[in-house]
Each structure stands twice: as C-alpha cells, then as structure tokens.
Length: 87
Image 1 (cartoon, rainbow, N blue to C red):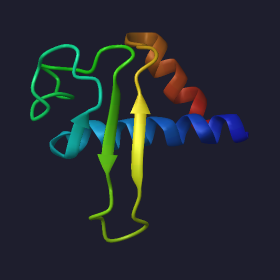
Image 2 (cartoon, rainbow, N blue to C red; image 1 turned 60 degrees about the vertical axis):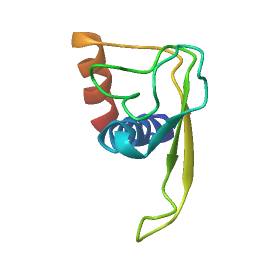
Image 3 (cartoon, rainbow, N blue to C red; image 1 turned 90 degrees about the vertical axis):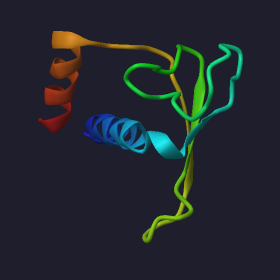
Image 4 (cartoon, rainbow, N blue to C red; image 1 turned 180 degrees about the horizontal axis):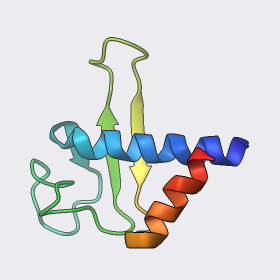
C-alpha cells in the first residue's frame, strides 16, 4: 500500500514539475539549451538531468524539490502503472 501511495505521489510531483516549467531551472548545463524553455514538451529533460522546482513562493507548505530523470516510461506501460497506483 505504501509503495502505491509513493508511486501516485511521484506521478503527481512529476506533473507538478511539468506544469510549472517556468520555475524550473537546469542544474546540468551540458546540453547547451537555455533554462527558460528546458522542461517543456519541445525541449524535455534528458535522462540524468536534474530539475529544481522552487516552491518557496507557494501559499501552503513551502518547499524546494529536486527531481532527477532516471527513466522514461511511455504509452500503455505508463498508463498501467498509473492504474496500479490507484488500486
């Protein structure tokens, strides 16, 4: 049960980071792209890159989140993991 909750929370955090791409900055500047558009659909993070979300300007529970891309799962396999997290 704890594993499923952790997976759902991870997915929510990932979606939060993607939705707030304007506040995300790149810690690994090895790909030469600017940080203003990094983390968007047209310029996604590479595996191994770390994104930092500064949530200190949020109203509730201020935080700083560092998220490192270690794997990409797409399509039916990704949806299956989402459904498993809700059971």
